[in-house]
Amino acid sequence: MFLSDFSIRRPVATVVIIIVLMALGLLALKKLRVNQIPDVEQPVLVTNISYPGASPDTVEREVINRIEKSLLSISGVDDVRHKLPSEIREPIIQRVDPSAQPIMQLALSATQQSHAEIS
Image 1 (cartoon, helix red, strand yellow):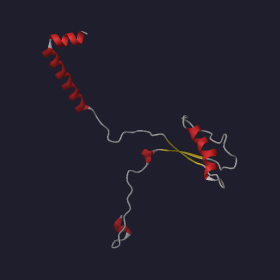
Image 2 (cartoon, rainbow, N blue to C red; image 1 turned 90 degrees about the vertical axis):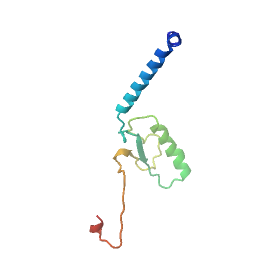
Image 3 (cartoon, helix red, strand yellow; image 1 turned 135 degrees about the vertical axis):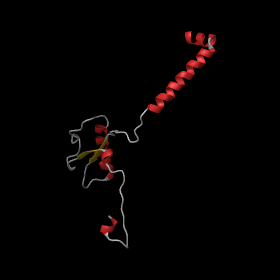
């Protein structure tokens, strides 16, 4: 109630306060540093499981659904073998860091130049 009463009784002061706040906001925005590629660690976990001789339906029902349920809500994974069929090979769990991947890959070829000249 105080803010509305003050704004009605002193409209010029209210406009001046708003302009000063906007100027301070623009000044702060100019000094704000923005990183083009921030260091963000995305949670990427790759699990490879071989189940030789099984049909796709069996693999989905007995392996994939159980693995997805167990990996959804945990931060550190030590053991995934629990409740999986004994016929599968040992699961390979790898944590992948996308920021460690190269930004660009190039492939060059030429018919007139040697490998040394291209490099």
